[in-house]
Image (cartoon, rainbow, N blue to C red; front, side, top):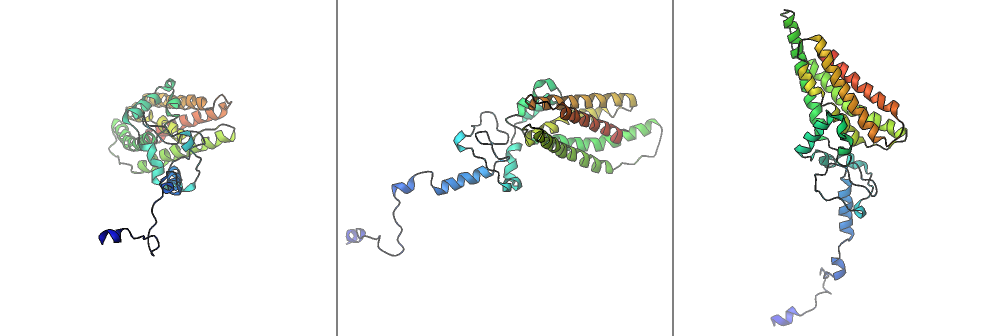
Amino acid sequence: MDEGYANLPTSHLLGSVPAVTPDDRKPGGAHSADAAATARLQEFPPPAPGGNGGGYRPPGAPAAADGDVENQANWKGYFNVASYTPYFNVDTDVVVDRLISSVYPMDGFFRKIDANPDMYGPLWITTTLIFMLATFGNFATYLIQKKKDLDIWNFDVGYFNWAASVMYGYAIIVPALFFFLFQYFGSRPSLVRFWCLWGYSLFVFIPASVLLLIPVEFLRWVIIALAGGASSWFIALNLKECTEGADMMVLIASAAVLQFALALFIKVFFFA
C-alpha cells in the first residue's frame, strides 16, 4: 500500500510545486544578473568601459575581466559608505612608500597612484597636520613670549577651528577646483587621484611644524620656505606628468603658487 501511494501523480494538485528543470539550473539567469548589476553600483567612482574599477587594490588582487566592467554612473553610489571602502583598504607599506615619495618628488608619485589611489593617507595626513598646527602653534607662541620674558600667555583654542577649516577645505576644494579646470581645458584627470595627490603633498608640513618650534624667526622663515618649495615642486611635477603632454603650464604654475601660499599662511597665522 505504501508503494502505491508513493507512485501517485501530484502535479495536478493545487499548491504543488513544479520540479526544477535543467534549464532553470543554468547560471546567468535574471537573479544573477540583478545581483551583478547591484554589486557594480557599489564601485566608486563608476568604472569606465573597458577599464579597471575605482579604489585601491592590494598587490596580487585579481583584476576584473573586461566583459564584467560596465559604466554605472548611478548617483546612489556617492551616498553609500561601501562606495568609499576600497580607498581605505590599503597596506601600511604602500602608505609609507607614498609618504617617502611625497618628500622626494622625482620618485614618480603619480605613476604609483595611477591604478590604486587611496584616501587613507590623505585623511590621516590632514587630520594629523590639523592637531599639530593647533598644538605646536600655541606652544611656539608660548616659547616666543617666554623668550621675551612675558608672563601673560593663554592657550588659543581657536587654532583648532582655523586649522580644521583651512586644511580640510584646502584638501577637498582645491583638488576639485583644478579637476574641473583641467577638464575644461581638455585634459581627462581623475578627481580621486587629485585628492590623493594633494593630500600627500601636505605631509611635508608635518615635520616642518615640529621644526617651527625653534624660537628663531629667521630660521622659521627658512624652514617654511623649504617646506613650501618642496610641496609646490611635488604638485607641479605630478600635475605635469598627468597632463599627457598638453600645454597647461598656467594651471600647473597656479597650483604651485597656491601651495606655497598655504605654507606662508601656516607660518604667518600659526607661528607668528
